[in-house]
Length: 378
Image (tube, rainbow, N blue to C red):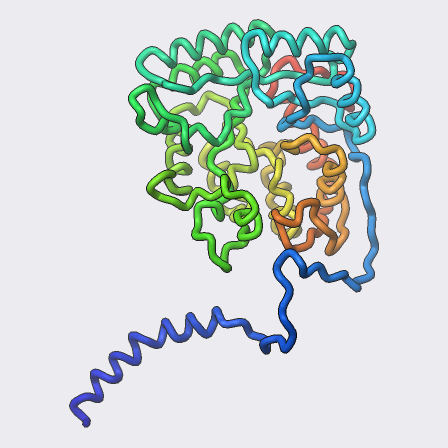
């Protein structure tokens, strides 16, 4: 019996971490005696009574760098969008629904004809399909033509770049592909920013299990599931490619859509900002992360106030005030606008006025050329 004691002790040591892990994962509450509701059925009403300070209109005029209004090609659409902008204090929208050639010039001409050239600027797009030898020079030439026509930046470059876009030889087009170096160098020479959306939230690349914070969203939208390594690169692969691309082009002004998908780890984003002084972040569609860490996020915004720009992503006018409330107030425990993004509540960051001004408009006016200046404080 004693001869087996060391073996038993060794087995106990080997099994103990698994047992402790299983215990930690086990719900720390008694099992309900009634049938539990599903995740979509359980909608508890909060009984918390706290001050509420809704903010329907931004405190300062705003540049929406991540604008996705409808195509601005006809007067009725333009007037409808401008009316919504006026109510929200959106002074300028960057049309980041990228277009090129005649599609780009048609919108620029329509906005001018409607008398609203001071309310919109336009980014161009890049045709990254079937890239092969000589494609970079062709794309760069089209970029120069679009800038001459009035484009003031590139983007939004979609997540397909790096994730699914294929080269002429069938290989995945990696973010740091040398064929595209001439494009990023051209952007630097022209003095225009490159607005790029890389990957998607890290949770979209993780197993679809009950520990995934984004389980509900992934259950609703199958096309947001990227955890199949046979079909998609990993989140970290894409981040590594992106960082190599940034390192190769220190003279290019980069804006990372959605804060580079690092708002759940602002320390990592801070390290990126420290390493690359030419890189900026945009806050579209990540309010759910910022609003659940208001103190740490506030400190981050104060420290990197020259590197963060406002952007919303989808043009839903009733959703903008949630951003104003998180950024401008210190309200507590209020709803986010899409429950499948976040099942938790938001808290106000209470940003200082000088930080608000930079995030809302001053940083955009600094890095985007030929921006309208009317309507902004001097």
